[in-house]
Length: 263
Image 1 (cartoon, one colour):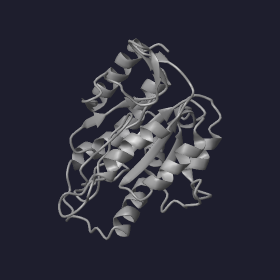
Image 2: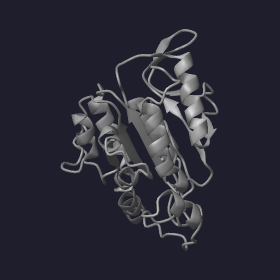
Image 3: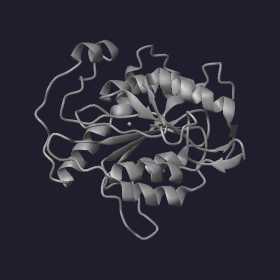
């Protein structure tokens, strides 16, 4: 993979990142990758910091995400198969420690960008079922022309996911976005992509807060001009919802702001 050209990963970071970034409160994103051999031992890892700093994986802004991605591509050896469970476990550890109460309300969005068919489907289902009771939404962006049937299953719009122990997910928390479908539309403002990316997040957020009996903070309109200039047909963030983080992992203080994703 050539990190110097606008491949589909870079396109996804720029386009989907621009959709989600206005909802983040501090523009700092923990970024992780999966499916690579890491130096110096070159053992396979399915959850590693893109910037090479395992104890401080956060980067600033979309440019920071792009820089971390390009740095990682220059350092690691990409290696299959594609597994999601390790990344999910990492993010669930973050979301599981969050308690939303009073003015401190937090919600997480995990953005996963992938071009492969996952090989740990059951483990992934089990973790999504557990995560459905946490302040977490997952946006999976599929790049390339792979068979994304399993991603549609994880989306769970038709059938709720059930773990190997027979436990049904408490709410739908996954949205799958086939990026190539929207890239063909050649929409310079990414309006269709924005709608698809954000389609289920508001309901997912509200369903979680209702399930926990958490009432929203008083709304405070903010950054209206900035949001309108990016996507005029999408309402601006308001101080009562969450934030997000791209690439690998994400965390945000909940004021309607919005999720990370691995490569």
